Image 1 (cartoon, rainbow, N blue to C red):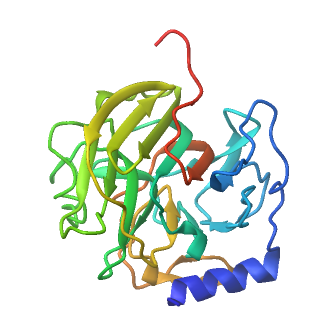
Image 2: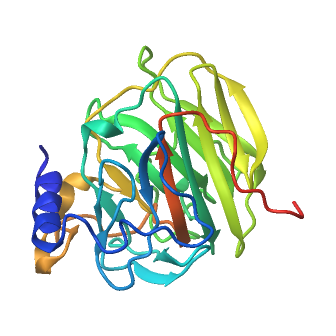
Length: 285
């Protein structure tokens, strides 16, 4: 167990293992079903404890730079371009991918990132053998002086240049050394609620925008299972998390430049153990 995982579990136990809102389904939102691994409605009104409505109660802790906001359905979580803007969910065996996989969310993106990408949600770290999958939005890949600092380069090999605003799904194959990256054909629109999803059935990776199939790629195999935690709305070395000041935050010695911080709002975030094909459709697209 990593230090960050141990701290998160301690904070969850001290607060409430079943965070407020974990059992409620907002009107119009999806409800957990037999294929749901985790479902974060993100409706907590004023709390750093994030409840999971799924069967395994994979509750998380929100960094202090996030805040509750009105969402696509009931409440949601707004993320800022700050180091402490994230939700951390400790590793649990139920997160291990099987033969099929889906990840989906409603997002309201206010800006594309300065660097390679801004993750919506990921189980991906810089530790050896802890890369599983990453679902993200590609960024501007700016260099100084446009960017304050050069990129740390964590995702340079995953993201093609000059393709900002596209969905990005990356996974580490079980039987291969190099991660596989897949990009949507169409970019997302800023300042607009959009439903996004990535699915994999062992044969095809599919990317979905507003319930419509945007692109698909042949890719045989399985996603590698690791001990990576879940990090929502950001990307950094989660080993640098601590309970400094009574809440989960990056420790004072960490690089606090928000290279990969998601900018906008995330709602109704779900992981499933099947390759779904029925997502909310937004008319007019």
